[in-house]
Length: 638
Image 1 (cartoon, rainbow, N blue to C red):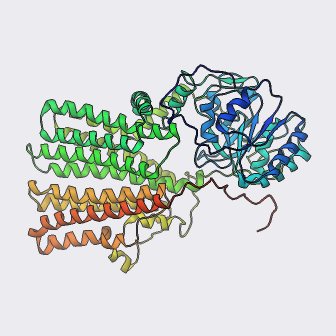
Image 2: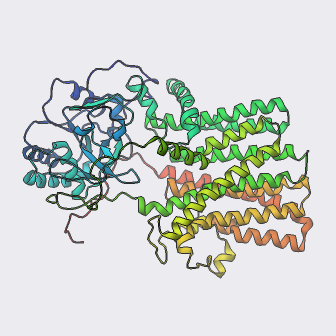
Image 3: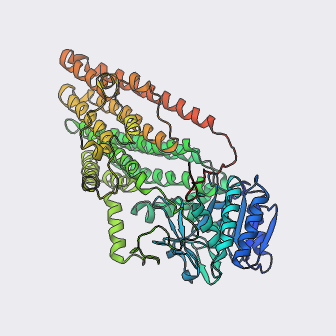
């Protein structure tokens, strides 16, 4: 951990250490040369008891076990003595909320030299846990990460870790890497070891090294604050701009939620300019749409850089995206109303397909969650090979070829993430044609839905997505919340569960939304004059907000909306019955019913959502990170 020229990013508060590992016991595995490693570690985790372990593998495991058993009230940090990196690189493992027992991991392609000298590990498909570790005497199958040499053991796991390391001391292979064996012993004993990405930082260990991203360590941390897995436009256009703004925000002490509010304001302002119908103001609106997207990335980057997260902020950010998007749809419909009939129907269709895209995405991800969940190989240390198949590779996969990279990004674009949609909106606005913008979004997002949902359906029906059939599915309770079934459906029983529902039930939330959108749009088309058709859009916009809110609360808090909400909001079945009854017996009252319904649903859903999020936030207390439960040891009962 050599000296590095500081290229500071942000103010002192942004770079502050939270102290989540203060007082940790520290074990250094190997011969320490100089004092630099300890100096850098002491910045992030000022040590309690320190032990230098420069011994044979078996003796090293015994020393670790003794240190782990000596105390149970502070974390234990284990570092390879030849690991050299920077303070910012340590923060996500040693000073980030939510990390219990975890090991720093790096992608093979991020290592510039000497990858073969780093222990190989396999991390689960969901990226959460280390499943297996390779070192002398132990074979890891399908490795996809490497260990740079830093481990944090939560206080609640220290006793179990001591037992695991004592067992390892008795059967340790003399050529095993002590650090890799220490991690392997934890994994095989059933202690969940989180895989914490090191990020784009420079580091070296033994003969392996990585240069990391351009700039100094804090500049590298800013680069690592960009969320991974973004679309093509976001990765190569939006994020490079947003990081520049993030650097300013970190220096000035901006809060993520305030940044979200600014992004929302810019998006709504853009919609207001679109509503004027002025061609030159549309050019300004096109720029503001992109500016709102860039600013929208800044809040998350500030949160990740400073390690100050808020589920409410994540919800506000996601809902704000929809508010901006749908405000533009409404503004386009207002302008298009002067040039032809039924513009609001186009706006409803645009809103419907975008919402279908997101609802289907979340439900399918939930379907795959059991398949993608990390499953550490819990088995005796005496077994050389892990639980991988005999034909599985035992080396890192080769880097992707150019063709694979191109296919990856083409699929990303077809998926139509937010940056691609916003780009289409801005480009469409430059034409000055509101109907063209709406049709552009309808066609592109519809093709995306057909592509993604069609492929997923085929995989589900063929069983190629790896999800085992179950009757009834364990996820039905989760899906029932998303279906938004009201009193009528509850009275006569929930949705009919045909045999295919066990395979395609994840499509039902999007289907229920699509049915409601189609019925309301058709009613508006047939029974409302052009000036009144915006009421149908407002009605559905309130429903769309609720559906997004349900998804975000399930995803970020695990808690559904209040059970009485489906009664007060009538549910999809109740709302459709009321609207169809009005159409059948009192069509003249339809505008009033839709207006009152839109206001009632907006107030109802917003009030309950705000109260629900507030209750959840208040219930969160800044308590120490508790260690997850240790899996039963191999052969253990119970």
